Image 1 (cartoon, rainbow, N blue to C red):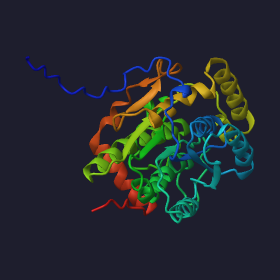
Image 2 (tube, rainbow, N blue to C red):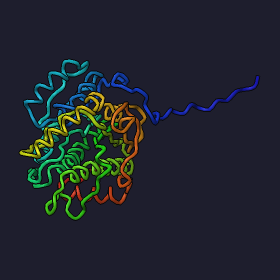
Image 3 (cartoon, one colour):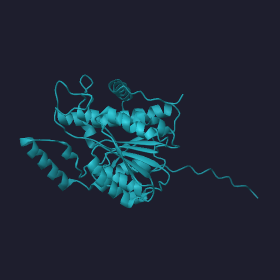
Image 4 (cartoon, one colour):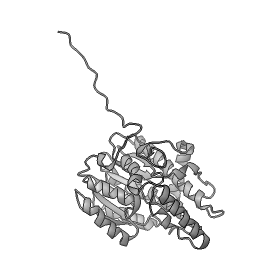
Length: 326
């Protein structure tokens, strides 16, 4: 009898468009540890809830301990695995970032997933980090660059670690202000915000490239929530006529935006879908709203030269160099 030879089936890649993918499609995460920054509200809270509901041990890295305590109850109520915990973290203070990383490192526990979710938007010129960086660049990018680097040993203890960094559709308007990245000379708050979100994409690309170059299993991916109703505008302490404009913007946002649960789906997809390629970028299907899909990015985010230059700048500003295995 003639023998029939069949080729081994190739693993299917995740679809370009995940049609109606929801949090219910997240695989079982039992035995995994996830760190989510900014988990006290909005997208971070929804992400923490969804991961805990699938069995992950969720560490909620939050600046506001009062809000974090209330959020902890919500996450714990739906958790099916270990009880979630709050990890004090202020990304605008590198000393706080080091304390948080040290606290996790002494546990000697692998971190399977790091979701760099926390962010601030359109802050006034006076808003600065503890080190004097522009608060948007310092919090949204430099703080996460530092945290990821300090947690790298714990990430590499996991068999398949993943780092998800949350960007924004505002990254389309982003340009790195190489001469004055901390906006000390001329300050344009929305350009500063867009710069920080482009930096998130450049960081993701370079982190993923370096992880592969050093032969590690870590992958880095990015996501954006589209237009989602969160409390991000509340991070803008405005007064006078600017406060009225911010209020109008917030009302418009609520009228046009999708819910924070929908907005969290792209980062949950990026965090949990098996086989997702490194340096993938996930956003809503219609860019501003909808179910998650892999999406395009600002052409500058594809520049290897800019990604490397931003990495060198971040290393110099924070004083943190990543320690890759030999």
